[in-house]
Image (cartoon, rainbow, N blue to C red; front, side, top):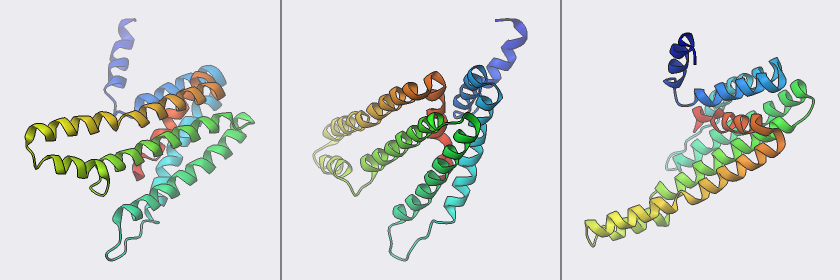
Length: 191
């Protein structure tokens, strides 16, 4: 690597955690599809921000109601908006829907990861209740049970990420994998 690129590369690597996925999508898109491929992830990131803002208007809490259900409604609206925008942009920019499929699978994987996080961290579900029960017998069993639940909680997200990678690669190659990452992070503002 030449000396003049080192400051640029180091500043990109210290960027917020979601930017490298966008940089890779832009770079791969530029190489594979020229300008359309570079602009598509940018438009989707912008659509994700706008969709997250719109989704907040659908969050309605009720007295004595479940706040998680209200928050989920806003996320579902944001997901739906990004799906529609990705389909429209994919058809307009690429003449087909393969790139949108990669985005949608990224959204789906992000959704499943969010649901699994809720399942393994909410006090309404068995996992957390079991850890709490084990705390009555001592610190050692609490730590062992917590570690076991933590390890178990990673299985479904890892499998979903693998499926998302395979599907995204099958429909749009390496660019599809990068788009899936953009899709997964598109609605981060609403989750």
